[in-house]
Length: 417
Ligand SMILES: *Cc1c(COP(=O)(O)O)cnc(C)c1O
Image (cartoon, rainbow, N blue to C red; front, side, top):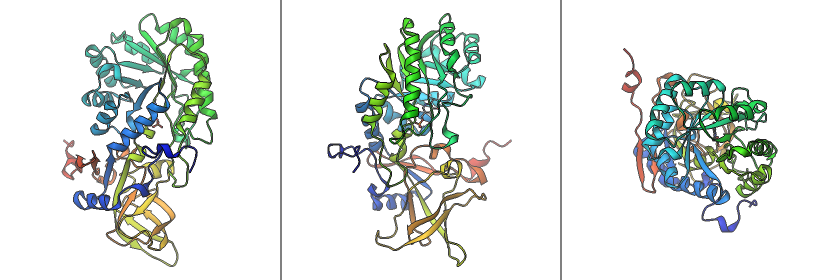
């Protein structure tokens, strides 16, 4: 038991492992709704929101919606009092559809298409409390051109990145935010035409207990900037998301208390509210992906290859980030002998492999496997590549309910003219 897993938190543990899910219930859901199937436990989403709010009692906690934009999830998160950080006009629309009001919505514009700015500015007329975060002077000009003079936040490139993979490191990448050295002047110039309410930085995904140094450095720089701007009386300093989750079963969970303390220390005295934007942390361990074994191929030359009906189009993270996801065979007893397997999907791509050389309770055709920590960037990154319809999704409220039906083959050609 790590520091984060104290006994008093057992009602709301810092992580839900794949082994803690009810295998019989998951198998029943797979039988009823077929696979591949995502299952999201809204109760666990709620617990994750509460742990964040408890660890950061004075902060404004905003859920980064791109981790999972399903309506049931957004409604749950909104019901827990979190704001919603949106990466596109589509996410802004989803946030409002889920019951959010303008003050709950932060739209973070990254090289925003005209269409997105048009939609958001239109929304702003009815919801003048929404906030737009900009990362370039160009975006500020384009908002001004559209008559927007509302709440503006400036995204700063802190020059420091953090992440579990280079593809999720944003902080040091020139794509994101105005350069740190220009930030003060961008903020001051914007005051003539906008209500500048905050500054923002997001270093990337993967704040881990072992290494808080990058996070500390980002927050320290944001504190310095906030103090340099103290005459403006900014409302908030948003230090982004990136709170890591333990994908491996033996990895300890993040100790939020430690992260919160490090954040406070690094920020120092500022006369503005702290804001954070966790995405993954809110939903990752609230979701599993269920998939059925359709092929078992044994050979003397290679390890056993287990073919499943979910692929990189269902869960992209292993192919895109070399991500590790725990896998459990729900159809056998836990004492079944484990064999060395490679689990691969139905997509004609070499990278369509969920895991390689993994010990797994001996699978047979028809067995249902559960893939853990699939709630964040899972369904959200699903595609129809190989003309494979997107999966269905069930939410537990706690009674199961079909939240998104399986995409049909007919839907794949619906847009064609
Ligand atoms: C993706 C993103 C987040 C959330 O990142 P997580 O790793 O899911 O916590 C927060 N803020 C911004 C601006 C993002 O782009």
